[in-house]
Image (cartoon, rainbow, N blue to C red; front, side):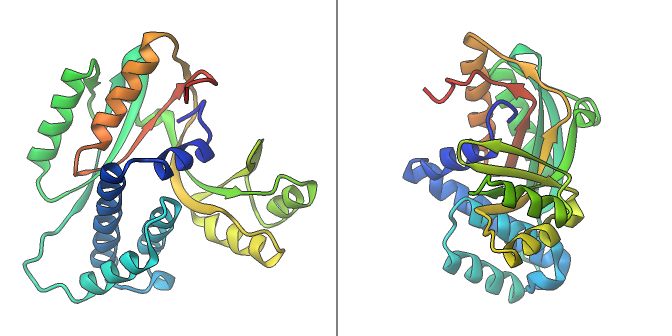
Length: 244
């Protein structure tokens, strides 16, 4: 979410309770297995979707053994195994915010019904396709625990589009297809990334304050709790003290 750096999102997920962490791991396992099947390969070097799924899982501290076992199971899956497809949904949250939701589902009717129910219960509204997607842009985001001038120069040299300093390091944005080239270039220059993954960045933001902050975060949490939902992106600009 805008207003929250990607660092804050990662810290929030790392601090999730055991129940939420287990559910989050399950979502990543589903994404990895779906990427193997859709990409036709268990080798991330030749399957960009799988490479992205693994990067997202590692950013959320999914154990390497879990990742490797998920790939093995997907490669050896028998015909007739559940086929999951990517479906996106769009909607509106408290304070006039836009929400973009990525899902992996084997039953679209169930998924849309579940999402609509959450919106209706939590003070949001499910929109039509294209209603808010134009407010988001797909980007690669690299989190580098080093905001030195040398790190910034290396980011630019290796193809970064932009970067932003934070108290925890450097947030680097790239074109989606350039993510791993930039990350590998930084590694070769001696700068190891905390994480690198494809995400959706809002092109404009909406300031949210007061009770709308709590209502929005409650809505997002409820959406993320749905089994079929992989990611929820918002264009909310949240107060700096939102963690408290």
